[in-house]
Length: 140
Ligand code: DGP
Image (cartoon, rainbow, N blue to C red; front, side, top):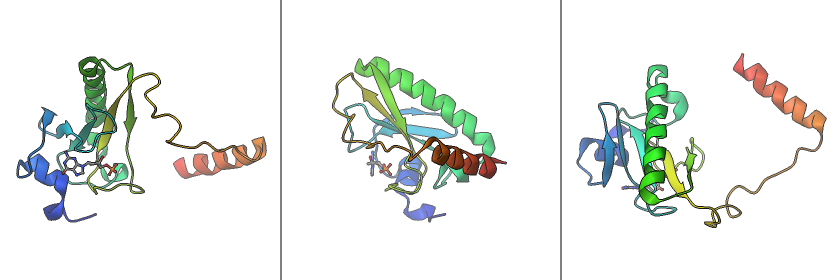
């Protein structure tokens, strides 16, 4: 786990780094991303410094995602959006090492689809079955 004393999002949680806070409770803060994919892009963070989703105490997972639901509804309503994109960069591509959930307003044909996530195909149904078996085994 990284050092919380140098964490940007801990500084926002502490109030020592200014941010446009849209929601807070005793365990979370949500604020505008300073470099939004679209205007109204919100980041939701748990107050305790954890880097990745797997570092979050199990008791905090449901409250976090209840807030994701609340913020996604609010962002959709406030921005007149058709929906939202909800995402976590979980270690890879994570530029701020404090767990954060992106809630991004989406409109139909807003251009996000296409530059993001080029899709692949499995080589075969068998290759797909082998991959599923690996993940099933890791869950056990
Ligand atoms: P990610 O790449 O998933 O780690 O997203 C980190 C996001 O954090 C990125 O979209 C930009 C945003 N961000 C980085 N530094 C700051 C900051 O100091 N204030 C705010 N409001 N957002 C920040």
